[in-house]
Structure formats: C-alpha cells, structure tokens
Length: 319
Ligand code: TXA
Ligand code: MG
Image 1 (cartoon, rainbow, N blue to C red):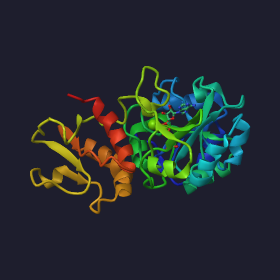
Image 2 (tube, rainbow, N blue to C red):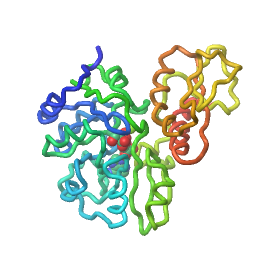
Image 3 (cartoon, helix red, strand yellow):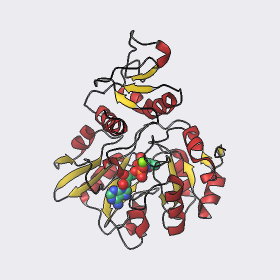
C-alpha cells in the first residue's frame, strides 16, 4: 500500500502538531519532516527512514532570525553566505544551543540549519511554532526522492501523508557548509555549485567530503544514493549486457536501442540534468534492465555534485 498523497497543507500541519512524520516537498528533494524539538517525533523519522541514530538531521526554519535561539554563535562569514543563499539550498553547521535535542545532532556540538525556499514547505512552517527536522525522504542508502510518487512508493504505510508539490526544482540536496579556523569548509557538495560559494566569500574554500571511518555527514558515506539495478559509469571497463539501460547527459548512442536510453538534457543544460537525475535513476531502476550505465559529467559547477552522487551510487557495484 502506498502512502496517501495530496495537497492538503492543513492536514500536514495537524499531523506535525500531533508529533507525526509527513513528507514535504523542498526545492532540493522531498524531506521526511517532524517537530525538531520533540524527541519522540524525531525518532519516528529515523524509524521510517531506517536510518541509524548516529546520523544527524537538518533543522529547517522560516527565517534566519528564527535560528538564533538554537545556536550559540553565527559567525559573520556564514551570515554573509546566508544572506546570499537563503531562502535556498544552503545548509550551515553552527554551534548548537541547549534548546536543540541531542537526537537531532547525534551528539555533535554543531547543528545543521537551513531556510528552504519551497512555497509549500514555507506555508507549513509558517503555521508551526517549532522548526522542522527533515532528512531526504528516501530509505537510508537509496536514491533521494524528487517527486511525491517516489516517496509514497518507498514509505508505504510507515508515514501517514505525502504533501505533493510536484517535481523539486533543484533535484539535488543542499550544499552543507561550515567554518573551521578561517576557512569555509564544504562538507557536502550540493545544489549550490562550489564556484558560487567561492565567488560569494573572501575566505579560502575547502571541500572535505571524503568517506572516513566516522563520516560526519551521510554525504561522506561511500555507498549511498544507490539504485537496486547494478549501476556503473559508462566509461569504465564493463561491457554492457544486451538488456542494459543507459542514462546520458545530452545525446543518445547509436550502438544501443533507443528505448533503453534516457537523455537528461538535450540542450546540455546542467541545471536541467541535475533536476532530472534522481527521477531518471528511479525510472530506469524500475524498468527491469539487467544493468544501468550513466555517463560521467564534466567536472565543473553542478557536474561536480552530480559526479559526487554517482561515485557513491556506483561504488556499491564496483567491479
Ligand atoms: O536538501 C537537503 O538538505 C534535504 C532537504 C530535505 O532539506 N535534506 C537532506 O537531509 O539532504 P539528509 O539528512 O538526507 O542529509 C543531511 C546531511 C546528512 O549527511 C547528515 O549527516 C548531515 O547532513 N548533518 C546533519 N546534521 C549534521 C551535524 N550536526 N553535523 C554534521 N553533519 C550533519
Ligand atoms: Mg539523504
């Protein structure tokens, strides 16, 4: 049985006020939301997502000012980025105040906060007097959802409702950023390309998203975002089987049946490719192909974020 899906904002608000979990659209991907100040509501998110409690959650707020009680410091350099990118797909790591439950940060001294821009998510937030904790609304380790149907298929009866806001605009998760000494650290590549962060700050910018023994964010876990169908880069030395499917950036290949190919952007538009990527992976995963191949993207702008996700999604099937 699929989760009920609809556009009833009031129903979402009621459920959230009662400590339930609902899926909401954001401009990046769908999120599994609950009252971020209610420990038992937050624990329901972990259960529904089958996510280990050691992996912390992002708190979502309507305005930057609403964050202030929940942090003990908001460095100027990060405020400056917030002014440029909020509301939008930027997540900041800030030192948490005692008002943030431990379950949110999994014991970390910093809390991840974000002000989303999606009008439906904001409408829900505007009717609540608490921030919403929300990870991506997929089961742990699988492809993030960018359409309501992706969530309702995966979540089934584990949550009561999915608010349908259509396809997510960006289609890739938020960019996660913090400050270490006097440098901007990117912990997860995301919808805001790294070049835009570099342009927006005078500080040096470093990317620190490699998988280690103790990943700080799930963007650092090596295996993630994986389809069920064995998934490979098109450029590695694996010969496609007869029943293989292909996801290409901008053009089909004559060597393969046309119906086995998905083109992300015929006009080579990277934003369009990013927006459609997860939906293409979901759709191709359901078509019964014996293998899936995807083209590696140019290593610039959103192409870097896309390649980062694809590296993790293919790692599970590496030969
Ligand atoms: O675009 C997004 O950020 C979406 C939408 C729903 O807002 N959310 C999202 O959440 O992608 P999630 O939980 O799937 O990924 C958030 C990442 C995780 O890798 C988590 O480990 C990391 O942020 N994170 C959260 N709180 C953290 C903290 N206090 N310290 C370090 N990493 C944190
Ligand atoms: Mg996620």
